[in-house]
Length: 330
Ligand code: PBG
Image (cartoon, rainbow, N blue to C red; front, side):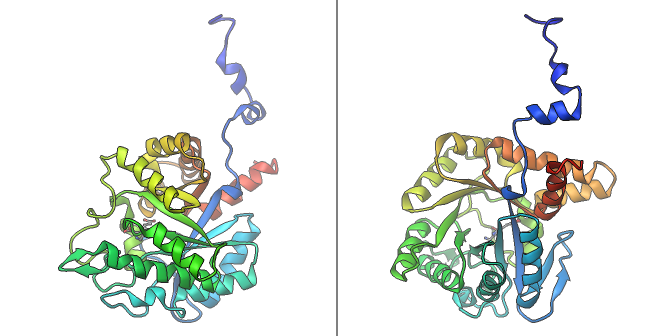
């Protein structure tokens, strides 16, 4: 029954027909908005390396959270900028950190909005690595205590989900135990389980002030050439108590997303990182492709590959567009 009886184009003749048969559909509920919170008051400062993104002080991030919730987006992911850096990154687990204060303020203003926090030391250490250094190397086991303390501080402040992004071995177990011991049994863990040592983090490191002073992150983040380790990393994190797992970056790792989706029964998140986001912006700015169409196509690809949750700097723009489409307003 090939051509001429079968004509694939019948199902593409109109916008209505295409909408009817499309398998994957984006919705505002798919998205998480990353937010950068900084010390100070009345700050809403554009981030030079990331178009349309801002550093917010705690007082100003609340209005942003409200506009995110109003779009039907269910969650935000908080990153903090340090007031003070030291060798240990001790501001990370301070109750007075911008992240802790922002988590509390957002939960007060928008109780239904899920507040996730990035748990890592890199924005707080003076050397810029994600863990404590010993003889110039990142000391895995010494770092675990500090990550656990950080997660507990965030959860106590009101975070619903803590998201360790450091890639130390054993951190999910350490964090789960510390949360439970503190009575924070309902705080969920989203682990950055398969996080690759990627060049796509460049714009973010400018935004968060978290670039390593010396060396790189290749001794803890994964080798982009190594697919089989990704499945082991995810399996281990689920075993240690991760409620949700993440693949990061997204677009260059769609194969990993698909494998993870087929293999594991926990919610799967994908992080469309700063470099992926800025690549689309840069191309659109040069007139090489349409910003809106390209944005939607990348997000569709990530969802089609298997992501249940998409963390993206495009979240607000994309939600506004898909909300209009869902209302039949093109
Ligand atoms: C911190 C962290 C990074 C990102 C999220 N958490 C940077 C890194 O690992 O160097 C990158 C996010 C992005 O590029 O948008 N460990």
